[in-house]
Length: 471
Image (cartoon, rainbow, N blue to C red; front, side, top):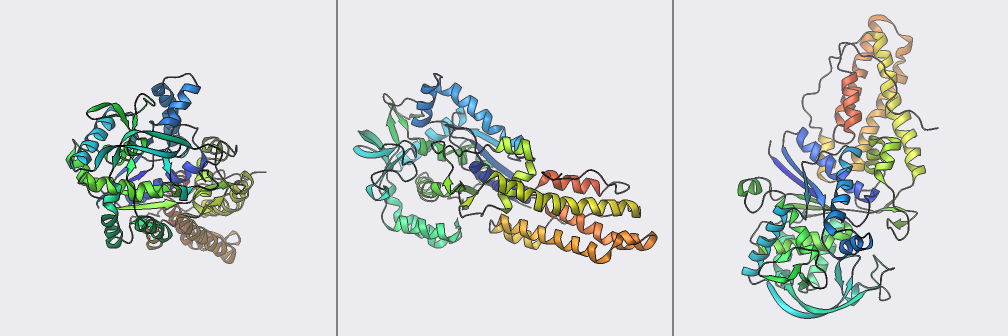
């Protein structure tokens, strides 16, 4: 037993929740649930990133105060908890009073360390990314992530963070902790980026031009750059800096992030932690994107898919299953509703649902009671795949167990048996179904609970299918 801390990135509240972010938080939820099953005390952090120019512009477009706009969207993201059956313990908003104070304290520590200074600069800036762009990052003069947006040319006096100072320290850190970034391809990518040389980056904006942000300590004319502010949520959610015990109990932790966050999560944030005199993160898992018809999800392409709507139509665990089983953990994977329906019928209705139904019916006829308890939650295979973030391999392993159990029924033909012979045949088969229920707990918790409950009463009773076929 120990303490385990996991956090997602914070979604930016300039749009509705979409299936791409549902992937990230479901992956994190599996890890949080698994550690609880192992007896760990878990803090699972989620929340909303609410400052910056994109949000300010959206609020103005909708003729709303920025905070009122953020309140509305924060509620929508918190609604994912019910829709996707999430177990996060903390929901942090970067407009929370405590986070604001923590961000200002973090700034002060970096400044005292000589890592924040004021300078004039001229940059090419992508509002979509809320990041400055170098010419080498552009494709035909456009940001490759937001090709439909014109870059802004900005020239003003701002505060900068001495990112360049931390090149060797970061490279030494990566060398000492080769498992820090998963998968290895992203570890290699960030090492190459840092090896190529780091440029100091701007960490403030003029309040007169863009007032929606956290005020810089000692300079009311400047507000913090949204990335600098938002990253601090990972420790402010733990009560830092006031609650030193809680912070030291749970930090460092695991971060789950999309590949477009690689630079920020594994280099910028880690340099900031070093500057503030704090330990680096434990590990960062970088997941791939969900694409629709080969395109990254984007409001501009109109391919945004609502996970709440999907869960309402097909069920929470149907959506969780597809995200975990059919989306590669770190490679881009395509999503369509037709693929979801095909997977639902093949794997859930005909696979798991059919197995549970036929075993329950035969066990009921055999008069079996529920003597099946698995007290040790640790399964070596599940433990291994989750340590390596291979959620898809975890699902494959469980569905292989489902197939084996179905084949065993076909081999034993218990429907031809009666009396004690039927009971003896069905006992180990029923035990296998219970085992499958236990294995499913971190992945499909609602379904797992139904299976375990059905097979743990005084008598096993057949009930309606877990997953009715979609016609």
